[in-house]
Length: 250
Image 1 (cartoon, rainbow, N blue to C red):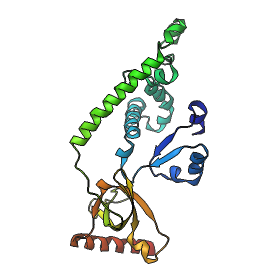
Image 2: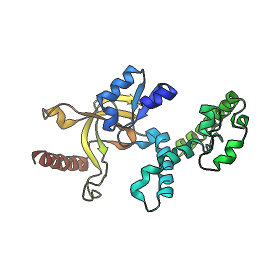
Image 3: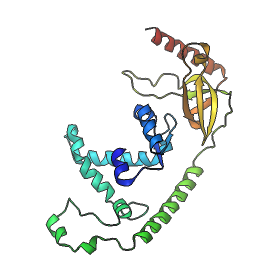
Image 4: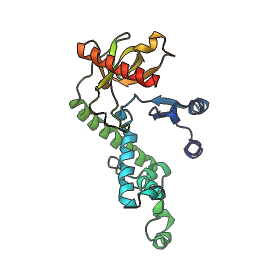
């Protein structure tokens, strides 16, 4: 963050997941000291930070193409990939990120540097950078409207919850040394502690209210929550809580 701030200035807002690097007190203090608004996405909802997920996919595909069988040396390719991403025309704006930010076209370090060095300096200057940025903004807004129409047309409206509602949350089926595909799909119950907006809810574990330790809360998106109260939910929750008790005793 120091390197980014030193070059481009402090961002107005940073959107991250809830990894320990971003929930650490040191990171929170840094954002506060630099007047940066820090927004943390809901658990297990990568779509909440879609721009990052899309960039990650681009970088991963590039790494696969460049490392071949030398998978342990993938980090050596990162500078080339970073340069390529920054100087590749965006599908929406049709211009490169470097041109918009720097107002000139950086010399291509992966082509014939001698020929490029002989080119006149004025060929690297982007004419009318302000107009270029305006065109990019209009293209981005148009692309966002198109994506919103597509998303809204294929999305089912989520159920709304209120403070005090008891709910279950969808499990993260992450491999932990054994298959978890046959486990209960939902866990809980939780109680809705706060409605955060944007279809996100702050939840509190029910058994934490029973004096078994300090209260722990978490944030989930509505599409990973369902209302608690059905008989099969109760049976599944009792089994899940029993398993958690066994693990804690061990």
